[in-house]
Length: 627
Image (cartoon, rainbow, N blue to C red; front, side, top):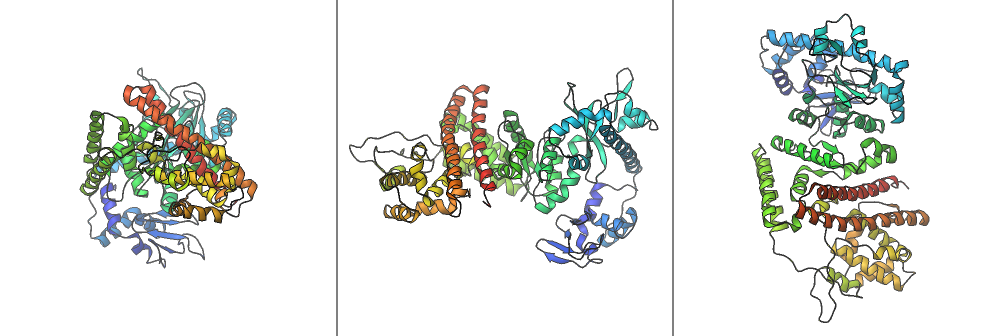
């Protein structure tokens, strides 16, 4: 008998998994979950967890995993239908009469899955043979280790039109077509669909091989080829690596969606196993729902080029109508020209974690995309952006989420583009310390003093990249100076070139440079006392407490030579960042005037370069955490 997914979902929802398992296993509360000793293997220390909210059990010792139905079949030895009938009686549900169509469909899927499983095993043997040398060389070049190759069951399809069909000669051609393993020409000739390709088996959530992705090793096009959609394989309803990433995602409460197979494999090899990928298409509604079954806020990670940014925007817009209370997305952007595997090989998992740390919320991404460059835009362009924001919020089906998005967009737009303009800040030549602090805050200048134009501020999109107006790199530099004033004397010229975006940061930097130029032997306590005397104690305390990059020079126990080397590196990055910020302001202005694709690309590249600098500093901070 074949049962509808809707009925089985209702059954799982009505019968808590802990209630069934608790009859056989002593469970104790562990936060939001329950734990006990695994009933599938002998253990003394509990590693078996049950989560009623998500309806699953998982053992971190032996890997046993499943739902309430799976527990009754695997642990209690019941046939599937008997388990369903017992649970239905407990839930007060009537088991629906079998549908001949549903039964036939399930039987077809099972028979096709048997063929794809045999094909996957054959591809693996071909990879290990003489013909697989090219595939082995490619994986070796990419740094993929043997254990990773085995874990993902990678294989090779020979460059032959008949080799796989010959291996599966007992299967009818129509079945092989339905399984997506062969193709048929207009003239009726049949041929192996995958030829001369590195093979990636694609499994469903149950771990069955349901299709393949093949990467060309030569000049064949397309570069990546998937199984044809059919009774077994539907690329819009699957996520690559879902079966292996699912348990890890539930444990870490994090799911990372990257762009391709090799991205998933590179992350897994670096120890980040909770990653999946769509199958060569933009995220579909079904794939988003699959991700939300695992975690509330999946992280979508896209390339840092124009195509990646457009893909992120498409995914965001597709997700908006589906949002529910607690269900959303965050968007992480990779540095220009790098993929997850590049980042992990160069900087380890810490470097990729730094990219994820810079992820922005869905609402921040939509806001930044729609308001990019509006600081210098015409009223008509601003009105267009406001309309787009209203349309985006209106597309959300859930009334509670929709109202809050509408309110948030309205408040942000009012504050950013409709508030009364403030007097521009000014700088007086030759002044420093507390007076500089007042000038940075826009206090009226005195008669006879020379006014200098303010340094251009950051755009709204740039501020989103540095935590809504907070520049972690600048604060790390200033925190280092407050702890080690000698660094200001040693790097005075480089520090003088900095242009902090925050007025308080600018005041503190100006005061530190002034006082350390007069007293080369000044120590931290004396510097803090001086800042207190000139009214900057609160700003100094904010910088010391708010610094999020725990770089070596911000810690007292770091050797002086290490601190100085890291400070020099960070200062060089911060100086480069200042130039990029100014270049970004110019590029944004040009794009708003021209609306030319070239100017848009230049603007996006500058944004990603700034993001890459931030990610590099976060990676350095992580690498020095213990040092």
